[in-house]
Length: 136
Ligand code: NI
Image (cartoon, rainbow, N blue to C red; front, top):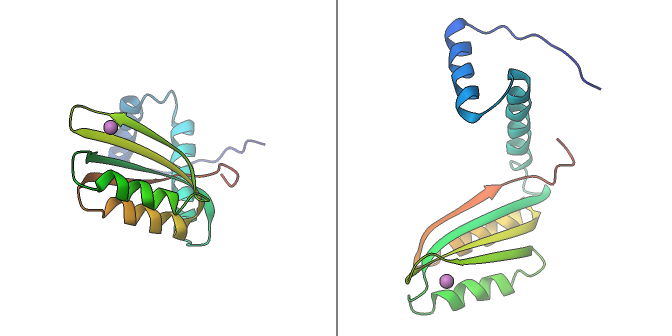
């Protein structure tokens, strides 16, 4: 059931919010506010180590770097119960991108993500927190 509520905001903040909506392609303020609320709820879910949820690690690395691919693959094989899928993209003659989808507790996913991202030779790595969608 949808509920309607009103928000009091000063002109300057509302004007900035409306610009943000336009830039991000929202048709109306309600959907934008719903998304802000959902983002806050997902953020809150990730504050608890025990939350069972979904996260994605994105890595960029040079596959020529000695032993690096093996190390990254070993870490993933040690975490088969956590890793749902992975996608490897050859970016150019040197660099690869790997997208690793995980499902598990926040603590487990952070541990694996930290190991992958901190592996020597990984140029860029990031854990993207998401949600199973059940609680939002
Ligand atoms: Ni590659």
